[in-house]
Each structure stands twice: as C-alpha cells, then as structure tokens.
Length: 372
Ligand code: GLY
Image (cartoon, rainbow, N blue to C red; front, side):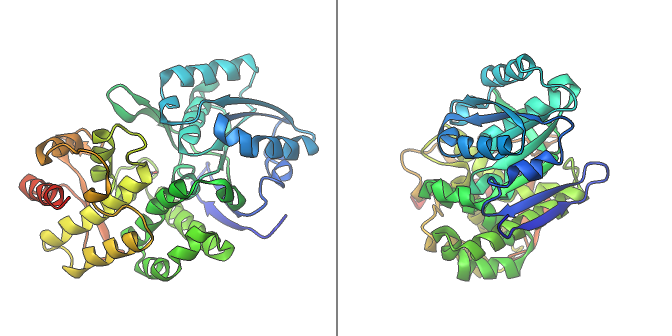
C-alpha cells in the first residue's frame, strides 16, 4: 500500500484509526477485511460518487474475498432526509445485514451522515466504516461520530452519536472533485487553524494554494493536522457538552446564510463556513476580544485562495439583518434561549461564549449587508 498516515481517535471502548493517503481504496480489502466478522459489507453511496469510485472499491474488496452489495442514492443535500434514509435502512434489512456486519459509507458528508445514522439505528447499532471522498468529509464530517439527517424544522436535527470503526480517507479521491467543492472543503481546513493552531494557520497561508492545486504532501499534511485536531477535541468532549462546540467556529453565521440561500448551489456549506469564520473574527474584534488586524488577516487568506470571504460574494438577494439573526437563533447552538457563539482572542485562540450582545451581532450583519 502507498505511504499513508494514521491518526488515532482514542475514545475508550470506541477507539479507531483515520488512515489518510493516496491509494487506500486500492488496499481496502486488506484494511477493512481485518475488521469483519464475516466477509461481506453493504455500501451506501451516491450516484455521482458511484460513477467514479464504486467499481474500484468493489474490486478491491472482492479481490480480498469480501462479498459486496451496494446502494447508490441520488447525489445532493435533498437525499439527507427521511425518505432516502428509510429507503437505505429498508435496503440494509433486505440485504440481511446483521448485528456483526459492516456498513460502509462511500461518499461526502451527506452519505457519511446518512449511512452512519442508518448504521446507528439498524438492529440497534451495527458497525460502519467511513470512506470519505470529499475534502470536507475527509477533514470533518467523517470523523467524530456525528450522524444524522435533516428534518423539516432544520438541518441535522435528527441523529445519533455513532463512531465509525475506521475512516479510510483516500486522498486520490480529491482528484475527481470539482474545484468549487474542493475550495468549499478548504473552509473546514482553515477553521482548524483559526480555532486552535496559529502555526497551522500560518502554514496554510503559505501552503494553502498547494493544498488546493493537488500537491500530495501539502494535502496529506493539511488533512492529517485537521484530523488530529478534530480527534483531540472529540476525545475530550465526544457529545459536545463543552469544547466540541469549538468545531462550530463560523457555523452559526454559516447556518443562517445557508438557510437564507436555500441550502443549495448559491452557497455550499464550506463556503458558508469560510465567510462565517471571517464574520466571527469581525465580531470578536468589534467586541474588543482580539486585535483589529486579525479579521483582515483571516479574510485576506480566504480571498487569496479564491474562496468566498464576504456577504458580497454570495449571489442574489439576502434577507435583512434581523431576519439573518432570527435564522441564527434557530441554530442547534441555542441553549436556554441564548445563542452560543465561538469567538476568538486571536488566530488559534477560539472559545465558546453566550455573552455576545444581540445588538453587536445585528450591527455587524447590517454593516456586512450594507457593504455588498
Ligand atoms: N462538525 C462539527 C463536529 O463534528 O462536531
């Protein structure tokens, strides 16, 4: 197997490895095979990912004597709801997937979240492997055990914590990603530098372009460092009673912007995260929590790489500041009616607080909208 790196998620009783590198799909028969009680797996994927990766993945498993069945759901966020979830669970039951069997999620965040949740509830819990094929899934959604689907009332409102048994992040899959999806995934990468590792952010400022253009070493380092940071936080606070909320830096703004733009092509999740991180630093500076030059440095890095960095980069109309604030208040991070924000004392120094005056958020949004 080509060289790869391993990050260990050291959760007591639920520990697992994240393997990162090129060619991991080719060697999947061996790595996944060692985890199986009986030599068979059920793969959940989407039609778009299936076109690129299902046959090589199936061949690698079958070469190792593993029987494979697969269901490809439609690609896109609309799949992450009750109808396709119920279809996936019924299919797994029809395939007679038993308690000791393994479900495999082959795809991006939508498939990883849906398949993980299906594994969590099937026969009260079967094991699953994440094979993330997007940058966003490799650095964030495939790690840490958050699984779920969307409900009519909002995104990710139904789900379970269910840790995978292995994450196999084949960096070769990123070569087939559309440039926009790759850049959106980078929004989650820079989040890690901003929330807890200023040196990593500094490294991204000089190597971010190489990460996006496909330099294998730069990609490996960016994904490994992101996974290390996520693993460390998840081990400290698996079910988000405290520190795990740091991973939501930029997300309260992002969720409001996604809701305002219809969770679609106008704004991809990772694009919203990048804009949200810049807004979180703007707000931190306005509240006197961090130096005035920090937001400019954050926004400059985002814009230098051609990512969306401000509200003006979102096409089409946006609602007014009051409406955006209301959408922020529908976020899961509302506790006891108070919005919890991730603010920063500087790059790499994020913290969670509920002590953010409503008027300061409103003024920031109004100014950001006026500057469009
Ligand atoms: N994506 C945020 C988390 O996993 O907690």
